[in-house]
Length: 415
Image (cartoon, rainbow, N blue to C red; front, side, top):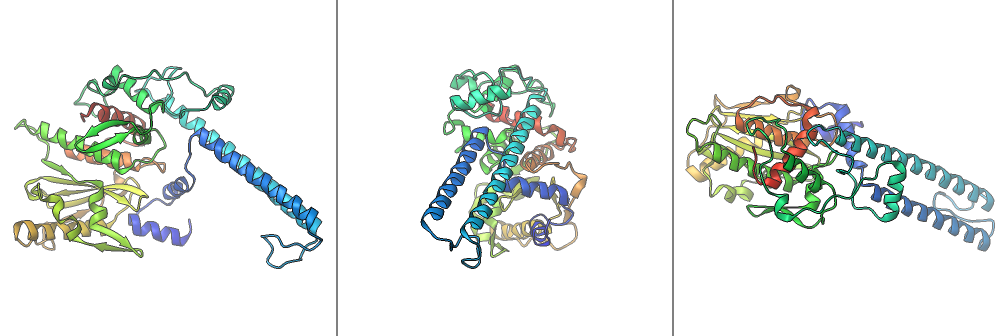
């Protein structure tokens, strides 16, 4: 990892970040694994460019004399035509070889990803189930059959059935088996057979389309819509639980993923704090009447973390599945608390005095081992903290949590 890249990561995530995991995350963002159909489309475009280049060189050879300037030459006329053609041809052959190796590697990754999903016990996949392949053309399906990757088509779901029922066997167990109906609904939602633009979840003016839902497949990065819908379910679950006066859970409020990005914008690489941009966000809620505030943190569309303000303990915590310790984020949230108190309560909040503590657990909380699961970790940090549970999960649980989040979103009920 270059020093400049590492410095950027330090600014985004804070200290204590594991270089190896971050590099995998950077590589993942730079070269994501698309669908097999997308591989083939890209490969066809590359071949077309190579053929066009060969035709152009043939025209140059036929119509131009021995002196020719090629794009990669710094000065014209350095090579005669035959030498230039030989160099260019070798260059294109080399590019083609690299592209073929890359495509082969990507297909291998695709196969491994599919194997990982098929091995998730909670889904109990049968041979006819398909969680990874998108809708394919006939020729693509033939190729998949030759590779042993093709699956039978997924049964078309009834719209009402898709979102019906509960999702887990035991709602008190954070790792409970999904119900059989929930497993079936998850398979359908992730199969790729549903129209991408169809709305699958409509929740308090938030919607999730088929396209959004596919982000909960393995090896996919969560977007704002998924996380906001999920934390909305956590908010509703908290309200249900607190109807019981004996419930030990903290009274929690979950902020939108857009809250912090509005509070603190980045201009020319520098953070710009602006309380006025979020002043009206809490006009319908008294945050100081809550026990806990949960704030998802999106770092430049690069990484998800979870910040928690525990008003009972006068404590701010920063939970990061890459072990980051971002003091800047908690500093801005402390400033926001002070501004919020003055604006809504007309009372100065002494955030600099004794009693307010900033906590950075670093790598002592569950850590991710890939570049894709940060959003799932952030969701689960929020989920567990709001229940007062210890973070007794790990990277091995992320496949299950993805499936459970799908099931809960479709059922519009977090358990």
